[in-house]
Length: 159
Length: 419
Image (tube, rainbow over all chains, first blue to last red; front, side, top):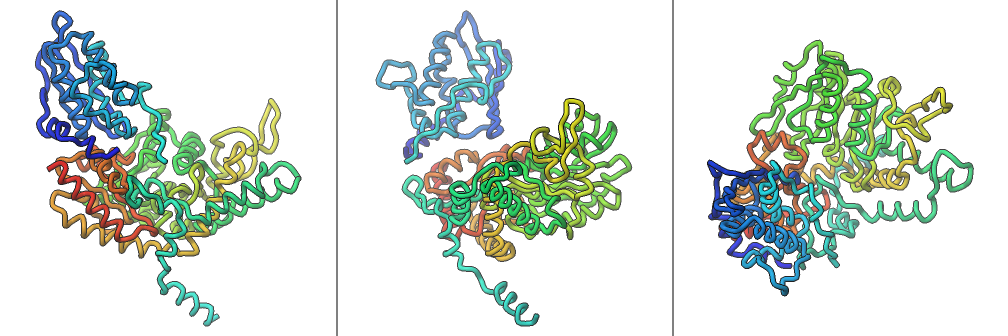
């Protein structure tokens, strides 16, 4: 794939001006995500009320892919129920690892801008880290790591 | 004698045909994303010339058997070739004896061998081990494991803003508790060449043995372990145009003999009963099990290949690339070179304002330019310069100036995308 189709304007824009950036003072849930391959880290804080994500914020040191993914994720899950957020987490993981059939109904909307990441196995973890971390926060785990899952795809066949 | 010396001199002064040498490396003909590959990740792993590939094929097609065992023809050939490879490495580093050269799986394995074989036997509670800020994780983590087990302490030599070791601070760290020094010859993250000879001499004046991690030095600097007088020296084949999975540990014979074995198994014994095992002599004491025979023979072919070109010729050519690339990168606004030591190998770590190294690496790849991005297994160096990671271009003798130009063009593309 052409890299420029990954670094699209929407991703560059969220990298430049991340939404929901910072830390909630009175979070009910939080988690820290690590990508040990690059040393990136991400903190997510959120306020869950009646099983609904009322507010959410993220902050951390990361690449453009990770930051844009986190920014768009927070925008997507704000106001959603925990169950709906978990559905998005699942669908985004499937999308990033090339397992999601985007012709079938899904809930990702503009997040499909990340579909090109499936061709860059070394960068899949950058895109998924915020979603792992959100999953950890929702399940009251303190931390998430990109190395603690089975979402890494097989290497593409470069011929 | 005079004519021989004269002809040798003329060989040294005549420059090798670098284009012809580059043609020895089939992988460099690859196209990535439709662009010619510019492989600038040689500090991570170098590429293999046809001569070494052919040697591996010849071994597998006509010489393979297990070694040090059977009396049949193939076993004798394989045993002899494996031994010859050891002797080539002995000559490559000017070791006094071939038994001082131990084949390991690589630099990490070698350091772990010294930690288990020497450290666990001789380092005790309260002892101190000196390491430097520039160490690769492979020369930090084993010593931390030992320090935790024994109750020993690790002391760290700081670096200055150029990425050079503070030798005054190094010397101040010594006291009667100092029992070991682990020292990287050339920094993998920054390219800094450390003044190891003086540091080894200083340690020896305090009766302290020194291990040199030469993984980044051996491809670029002539190694003479007798002149250095280091106690241990180690490097890996795959950074020297050889195969992965093989490296050497050089150790002074008396030290190796005093050490305990690291791994137990076949080949490392003289006799075994359930009551008692008598260990084999060095180097076999440290080579349990069937070694990577093909890789060792390929390693021998690789040092033959490099020696034929000449390590000093290689270093001079690479220095030219380094100076050219340094000037080019210094000319790009927003690019900052991290690691500006006076003595460097052809490694440039750099940061671009506001752009994460992983994004840089992905976009450079689009132009066929392969660089390393990340913390380079040297997180203390990254912490010293307050960056989570850098991008690193590292050059070999088969690289050329047009590949530096491709890097520069790629960096400008990165900056344009993130404008």
